[in-house]
Length: 352
Ligand code: DAH
Image 1 (cartoon, rainbow, N blue to C red):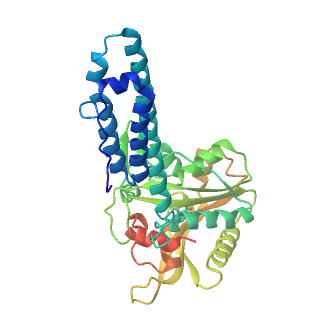
Image 2 (cartoon, rainbow, N blue to C red):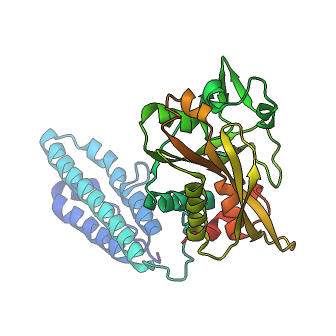
């Protein structure tokens, strides 16, 4: 601010005798200061100059006011000075607001050159996508979904599924025991038993879920992974239904682009038992090879009986598939750990 007025001093006689005229001069000086103000600093300067407690112009008149003897005159002059202080205070405040508003209006409202924030798009996990797809395919074939507990009783996980006591097949499952007869289920097959206890045949269900094994994390094993159990029980159901249904599933899932084959296998809860392999290239430079994607078989009569189903009247088949393996086979991924690492660089490729 280039200039600030230096107000003339007002002596006691002119303040007393012609108060209005004396103060009118101040108002003029003050108005000139206001008009010249351009910044917030200017406003502060004006405030100090006129209203400052120690050096301010109005404060400098206080001794003169104090020296007035006549109380009526003193009151009149005092009131005039108070009115002037109020007005100057209000004017300085208005000045500050005006300066702030002008400053904001002068700033650019939108910076169109500013980079935008990155947006993260969520994606369905490839294993979840497989589970959704398998569920949808089997829904068209008449299967509904059943869920069972991950903390399971030994009997449902092994006993009811015809695992003989202390059978080596139980070791093969590398079970994580919780104590008191409980364990983390090593497969989704216990849901077969729970379902048959609840519903009378015909039964056609799918049971997707997490299973747990005391395995090291390597390219083909995970200590926690997904399975999808399938179960179909009715009168007169045969191995032909099993093969036809699973072959049809593979056709729909891979769109007819992969060869599949059945081979013999062993599970205590099925007789006979089989496995289905799919021919895939896992993208590791080793070319096409056969990968097992599910185990299956005709449900063992002992399992039906354990679940309270008349095995003379009913037969059926079951399967247990690894949706992780299906995801690897579909996308040509050589290492199961990639599925369970939660690395966004991998996962974001599935955003749609
Ligand atoms: N429960 C078996 C496993 O975890 C997979 C399995 C095989 C399930 C055959 C079945 C079946 O229902 O019929 O290795």
